[in-house]
Image 1 (tube, helix red, strand yellow):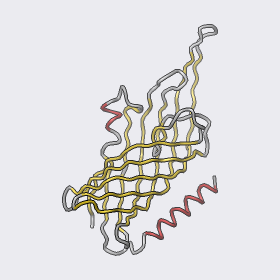
Image 2 (cartoon, rainbow, N blue to C red):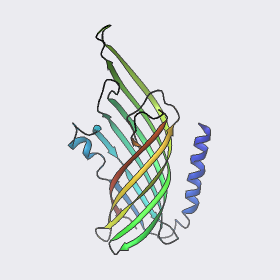
Image 3 (cartoon, rainbow, N blue to C red):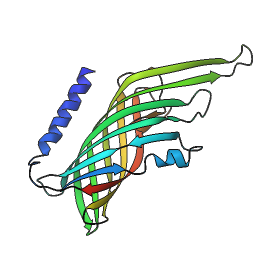
Amino acid sequence: MRSYILLMILIGASLSVRAQDTLARRAAYIGLDVINSLPSFVFAKGYYIRNTAIIEPYYLLDLKKPGRRLYLGAGFASGSTHQYTDFSPSQAFKGTYFRAAYEVRRMRSVHRILYAGYGPIISIAGYKGQYHFNGPTFGDYEGQFRETNNVALGFEGYFGFDFKLAKTWLLRLTFRNVMGRRTKADSYVQYFPGFGYTIEGLNNRFLYSGGLSLQLHYKIR
């Protein structure tokens, strides 16, 4: 556990070193994801999570080197997954996560910029669920499980496009892949805040997910 935390500190420190000259009047944005929660409410009966509130604020800061940017994000997720089979019960979850990245940008046109980035992510979550096994011979069996303060450490790579809507407004479309490892894994989790949907059948400690994010940003300087 200590080695993972030390690794995260070292990676974060390296990103901070890259953020040179941050006191200068360089462009900075604050933003919020505007799509993550919607599918779980609009498609509550068919989406893999349901009635899930996901709040993700972001901070973007241009660095001294042209075309480079520091990307910081945080998040909170609270909701539940769907029950697909008796062996994969619904799970209620709640968690907080943080991410940082070093970003490279390339101008595609006056109003569109291609970007890519990479960096660490850490998530702390808790979840609980109930399972039910049909027992035609000996009767049904029901049980519950619960885990709290479950920590996951990982790495994120992403790319996407910036669209300038106005002088002070920016729309970002991001495609991301996240992989990581839980420090404790007594049970398989279908969704881990900050990492997303997890593939069933893999080691309980390993997390891997892909997804997209649509963010609206406002230029503060």
